[in-house]
Amino acid sequence: MSNQYYEFFCPVKVIAGKAALEHIPYELTGLAAKRPMIITDKGVRAAGLLDPVISACEESGLEIVSIYDDVPPDSSTAVVRNITGVYRAEKCDSIIAIGGGSAIDTAKAVNILVSEGGDDIGEYVGAGVLKRPLKPFFVVPTTAGTGSEVTAVAVIADQDKSVKLPFSSSFLLPNAAIIDPRMTLTLPAHITAATAMDAMTHATEAFTCMAKNPLSDAYATSAIKKISTSLLTVMDNPKDADARLELAQASTMAGIAFSNSMVGLVHALGHATGAICHLPHGLCMSLYLPYVLEYNLETIRGPLGELLLYLDGPEAYANTPASRRAEASISAIRRLRDALYKRCKLPRTLKETGKVEESQLDRIAAAALDDGSIMFNPKEVSLEDARAVLQRAWS
Image (tube, helix red, strand yellow):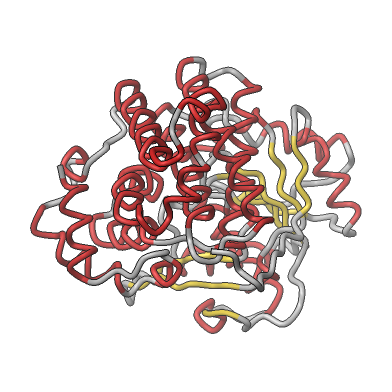
């Protein structure tokens, strides 16, 4: 699977480490931004996560003009329109998104409207619509999973039409991503587990799918190694800032990997399951990962076997015959899922979620075949194939 031609693009400045938040004012000033707006959600504000950002700005003489803290878990076009109105009324000139995937996607969409004008975000749907840079935009992730801080896409629900609107443009990328372990210290166990497995899936699919390339491979393998060595440490010691930082960096690296090499059937099934059964994305990723790897096994034996080094360490890799390494990689992922189930009941099968009916599997399979991610899956997938993978993931 050597691709003769590939492109790799990641122009986002990453500012990471123990005092990363304190650098935000310097970055804003460097882009002549004086009136930032913070976009976040109630949970993040209640956890006190805005405080270090606000005080850093105040100490530098920057005023946070407006704080919008009402982004719902599944953001919508109405929310985007709402925030845009506030931004204009308060004469803001830049955006700081603080939160998980939903807050970040919402901020990306708001940035389109406040930069390009208008009130209908639907006009900008698709790829290649935006032709110029948007307003200064900074992202502070509070979960270590989605990688949204380094991806050029956003998805916003149009609730009137019951569809999810996709936006894609390199201009959606933030000017900088600020990775600070203080932002994930209070993350509950089940969200820590699901988001880390989201990143693990991003990296694993990036390394085994069609558009993999040497640059995305480097990011993907590093991410997998960090998650394998730090996730259970964090589960057992939630306040371990060093291990939290490792997971946060892994999420960013996995985001860079998959936005340059695409993903496959795990994401296709996950998107479909999220839409039909309203399960969180990270949970779907964790749930489907081993079953899809088993389905793809004969096509990805080489790269999947290489991953054993990062999933289970050099000793296990050396002691496993080359012909068994791919299976051993799947076993390592299953062991990690079992360990997470033991610690926080993160479901390993569709049945364990308690939110999926066996009668819905046909609909999920059909929806997955329509998902763009499936184009990059290393093995062709028919409706029957998708249905069979779902049946295995059922129980």
